[in-house]
Image (cartoon, rainbow, N blue to C red):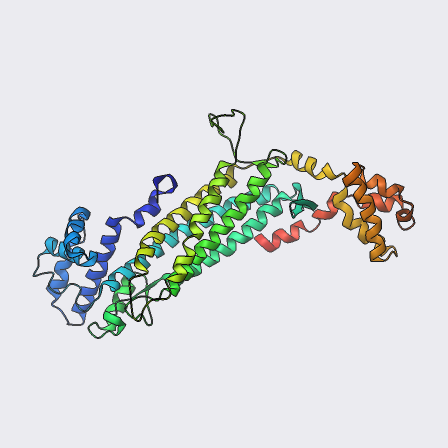
Length: 434
């Protein structure tokens, strides 16, 4: 991923240096396990650990790979250069390349998951704080982009919190799904490798052994992992889209923080654009882009082919790096989001009382009108507001048919905003607990 959308903690997980250190740990722990079983000399296993603090020369490994055309063999050759060919005689015994590659990928995805889980927790904290801050800040709810009925800004933040809380659970499950290792040898039969070696290495790496792995770890696990990342990205876009709408000039109920010295346009000095949430929308597309290839990786020939390999070398770092960056950016946007309660009320009043139409409809039916007749009465007065700029309450009070069912006091009571917030506390308790 390009540096512009990368954070160093996640980038480090996918560095060549980190990858080779994990490969080394897999090989070293495997040798320890084989020594414990009496399969190789203890001194050879001990000798391998001499390379524990070595800085593996990426350029040298690449140089060897240019000849071998095989990255794991290039690494093993370089490892022998560190500890001596005799000491390295039993390294990789009974193992196949996928034992190293797949188990390493699992370790990296687990590490990436830990960062993403922390990111989501930070976002949840920001959403909760803003939800509580604006619990009773009235704004208009919209359906189809059109004014519907009153809600609160706190409820908007709360529903995003609940969505992200579900994503936290999904991310934890995805981490569990991917936390498997496999050292089962060619085609996964353990013919040349005792299953106890796999169990030992997985324990050391905080993984659990893949129950049955052919020559690779089954890719349905990875498909589930990247699908989860795609869902989280869609939730990010969901929040970002709401903010982008609120920042539109004719809405302006909230906007991204605009810092001193910030510029919005090279041509128009007045501009303050929702660039961060637009950026998040774009990043969400990139993250979701990994889902279909991950799903297609599930189908491989027989016990193994490598059609999945080139896909994962791209999507594993890029997708986790993008999502880490996006979650961090969204948290900052929520933390600093500027809210305009007065504009929310102004927007609510643009339709001059129409948002209370359902209350009047229900009052008429409760007063004895049929639903069909009540709907006609309310709608004909509502259309005058749309088409003639009239006031909805005034029109209702002047309508003789409406007044035959409702008194002036009945009608005026239906325009009380507090009616729409009476259950906000109950919803908050459902979302955040008591």
